[in-house]
Length: 525
Image (cartoon, rainbow, N blue to C red; front, side, top):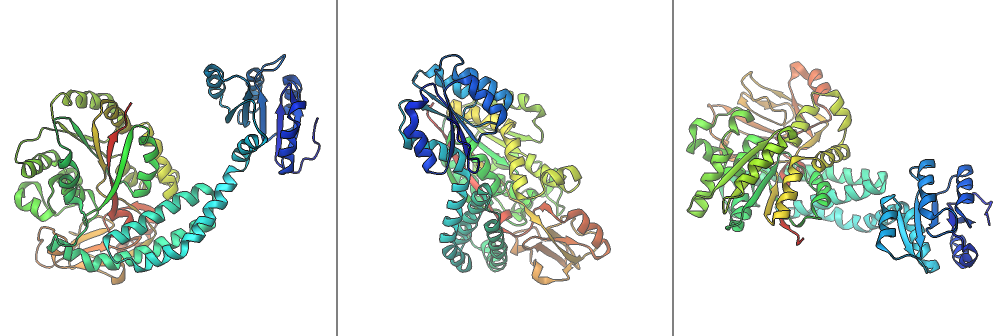
């Protein structure tokens, strides 16, 4: 029985008892599907060679060619054909074999017409249904979300609005709702504007008082790591330069192994490794680190020299917070080439009771820095969605993921966080500076430093506004707002061509400042 109407989604049903399935066929046809029904595998394969089908319903137990034999030939004809296996057998072996050959679903007879319709609809219409539902849900949420964005006036309110916009960006992007995705991006631009003005007002006050400020980089060890210290080892993992959306796409990889308790913190300013990551490991602001360790600190922005003492800073912080010496094993990983050696050292360290395994993974930061210098990497990670995909692809095969899976298997808890995020920069902001100004494109320190357009920066001459060590007399501090990046008037075209559409950090935006911290508890195995 072959339906010659070719206008709708086409289904091929192969079953030696096809005449008994007429109610099922009529049920599918009544809902707009065009169903061709064939009673044996050879005729089905002949038909499949002549016509493309959107879905094949394939009986496993038939005279002549079994369903799995037909599937084997079908996969050679069309490796991407969508197939649902239908069988009377409830044996695990049959189901496992079918799934192993990449069937899209599996039904056990007897099946009702509605069961079959449910499977067919999910496979053939699922993406469009999800797209429609995402659009409806966003339309219903839009007025309230717009109001929350306009009214945001506290750290929690800005964080909640930012996190929801990230969730909508991911959901609408997955659903292919590009028009509504543009609306979300426009709302994110507006949020950055309000966020920047709010930070300019509030941040200097946070630096002068702990009262009514959000959790900052300096609080992470005290708030998350110390409460989880015990005789059992615990991991403290920092993935450098990880945005909230990047965390969201690697979470599904971790969830089979851990129960995940998500939270957030605000990166200190500048949102750059020498400042934010040192603040995490020391529990101190940059001026406090410089005062207590004058040989370790200067006003350069060189990560190699300023982040060379993270292990000692962490040891000192834990001693200060607990009143005792806590054993610490520290690893900083720039490449997965030495993954086996890293894991061997970690496994050796875990033999010490109460060990804190602190690990810093620099891949994401190296990728964002290297992207500006590499046309190939710029093309591969051309926007936020591509950066998320690249981050997930790396993480899935990384030493970091292997270490975390092994920690879960051993029952060890993990604190997983980052020091700061990054932002895709589009707009240049011209600054006038002497030669001794720092080189970062999102923040500048130097004498006689000023911005051509003051609305694009947070500027101050008071180092205490940023808890930075005092500089020479006349030193100014500029941090870029929103998606601006600094250019010099003498190199305007060169910098615009080189750094526009780069992921940068060091300035003020939700993407750089509102970043994740999560507690991972191993699932029972």
